[in-house]
Amino acid sequence: MLTSGWKTVSMVDVHGKVTFTLWLCGCNLKCPFCHNWRIAEGKECFPLDRDALLGDLSSSSFLVDYFHVTGGEPLMQWAGLSSLLSEAKEFLPISLNTNLTLLKPLERLLKVELVDHIATDLKAPPAELYGLPGEASTRLWRLFLRGLDLISDYGIPLELRIPVARGFDQWPWIEEGLKHIDTDFYAVLNPLVGPPLTNPRNGAWCSEHCWPEREVEDLKKELGEIGIRTYVNRFA
Image 1: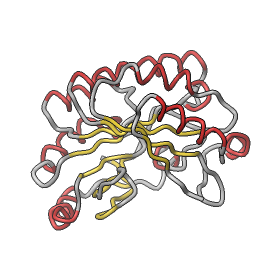
Image 2: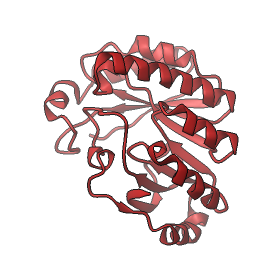
Image 3: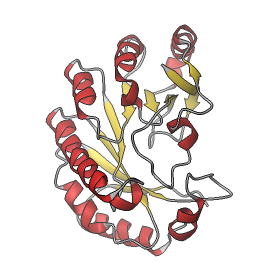
Image 4: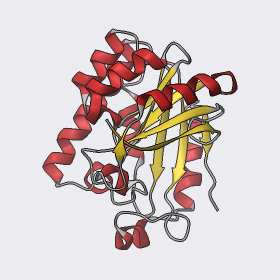
């Protein structure tokens, strides 16, 4: 497995929880706002030292709530991930950050009860935020919706992250996504930010669509009006 490293104690990767966070390399999306794009493209990555990781996990487990695996897209390395999670689960519950478009690997992990919590980004409009051609983005959006159905079928608690961009009407997509969730969840609005706080994949795109203001407040209000427990990450 390829990784860019891990952090033994993190307070920012799952809302309200302390995590031991591992970053795995590779991704099937090209999100223009992604600040982990080097990891997604396999740059600055190295083979995972499983023994060192599990040793650190064992030592830190009394401090944290979840072993949180993120990326990139962790399910790109699903076979190795499955083996790793089966060992890590001896120490901590598992939280997986996935884009919900790789359904077969995800269901394999769910069937053997290796995942206790999922975090995912509802990226909308998909043709803009996936960073891929329109037809491909449409297919991936449909897979994402099926992914929401899948985790609902298994009753996995969900952190629904919503990257908030400037200049788009994201609400119709959010409404569609919410219809596919039937499990315990809450929403986290993540206003997209650019330099100097992050180094996004596409700086020109970010100049046009990062640093939203009105959009964040509008979405928070709309989600609140339908009773969705919602939090806002503030980076500035």
